[in-house]
Each structure stands twice: as structure tokens, then as C-alpha cells.
Image 1 (cartoon, helix red, strand yellow):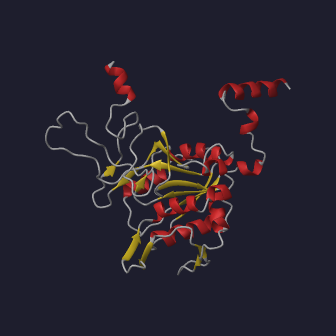
Image 2 (cartoon, rainbow, N blue to C red):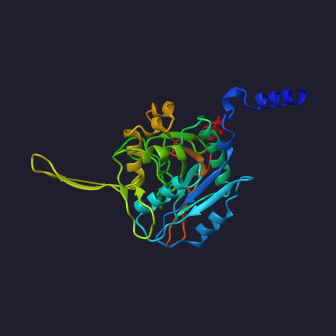
Image 3 (cartoon, rainbow, N blue to C red):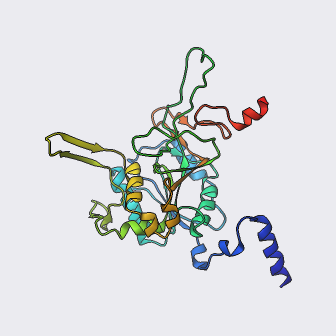
Length: 306
């Protein structure tokens, strides 16, 4: 009894704002961490990327498998990976694309989010941050006292909006549009998608099972009643972000309190992935932690100036 009381006191001291009951996992079997790392690829990768993938530090006692469909378009490849998750024992899917370079501690940081996901203390969709290749502002002459912008982060708040930059690197950012190059999705989200009655199943050559079309690259042309032709194209990631909200997938997955938010997804900007140019090997990383993405002075710099 004395030892147990000491453990409880230590736990309360380490989490002063969260009750012990809130952190308790009532299903011990759910404390396992089988995770699938999925990477769609056409087969051409950089050695720098491969070294970074192999060099990720795995948390103690973790169980990790990898799936890399080669030679398929992004949407079908992602759906094959999702199907592998649903047919296996995996608790979460981590999508890492073949040109997003993970930091050494990526799995350690994702594991913390995964722990919170399992206990409903975080939304079931969390992304690291990476940037559009070569998008940093480069000025050959004098700046005139105007700050230059770093690379454009792939974080979005609303369709048709430019990238969201109102944050300091190291912040947790809420958004409703995320990429799939550094994305962790809890299994419950994929199960909710698979239960949608109107989501079709596709037969993909070379893959033995029909796959639910969870990810889809929008490509549509139609004619308006007035005669005008319209077209819609886009990427699988932002379309999936939008459809997940429209279908209320988070509520169906058991995360209703996050579904109510205007921006239900999280991007952890301390979880910094590089974006490598396959032709040159140049890696776009964005600004250092503590710097603002919108060019304004950070709190750190303002404190020093004062």
C-alpha cells in the first residue's frame, strides 16, 4: 500500500492538471503499439531519405512494420496501405512519403501523440510539419528592413486559403487541411471510413484484396445547367481532410469532442520533417524552432531586444 501511494503521488506531481483516472487505460490490450509505416513510391528515392528512415529511433518495446507499394498512383497506393492496416493488428498508421525526411526522434514524438490518442486526450489525426520545396524567399538585394519569409509550411485553414503561418516553430497548430507526408492516423478513423456505406471498393492490379477508396485524387468535369463546364482537381491529402470533416468521421470514430472544433486536426511544428528534392538532394526544412513562420519577430527576439 505504501509503494502504491508513492506511485500515485509521483504521478500526480508529474501531471498536475490531469486526474489519474483520466490517464488510466481501461483496456490493457490497447496499450500495445503495433504501428504500420506506409510509404507510397514510384521506386525512385534518395539515399539521404533512406538513411533518415533507417535512423529513426524506435521507442522501447515498440512493434513496427512497413508497407511500400511501388509503381502505383498515390491514391491507390494509400488505399492498399489502409487495407493492410485494417486486415492486421495495427493500432495506427503512419504515412511518410518517399521525399519527406524524418528527424531522428520522429517515432519518439509520434509515440507521445499516440499515447494521448488512445486515451482521447488528443485528436486521432496528427501531422508533423514540412514545407514546399524551394519555397523560401530569397532576395538578392537589400531587404529595406522588411523581413523575408521562410519556406511555406503545408498547414491549411480553409479551402482556397494560402498556407497558415500565424505560429512560432515549436507550437501545436490546429488546422483543417493537412498533408499526408508525415501523418499519423488512429485505426478508429480508418475503421469509420471503411464503414461508410457509399465508399466504393476498388480492385487494384497486383493486390489480392479489394480496397475501400478512403483516399482519392479528385478529378471531375461536369456541365452546369446554364451550359458552362466546370472541373475539379486536387490532391488526395486535402480532399481526404475535407471529406473526413464532411462525413463527420471523427464523431463516428469516437472522437466527437474534436469533431466539434472548426479546426480538428493537429500539426506539431516541433516534429520537423525535411522535404528533399530528388534531383539535387537539397532539403527544405523551414525556420529554426522559436522563429515565427510569418516573418514577425518571435517572442524570444522581442525579449532580447527589451
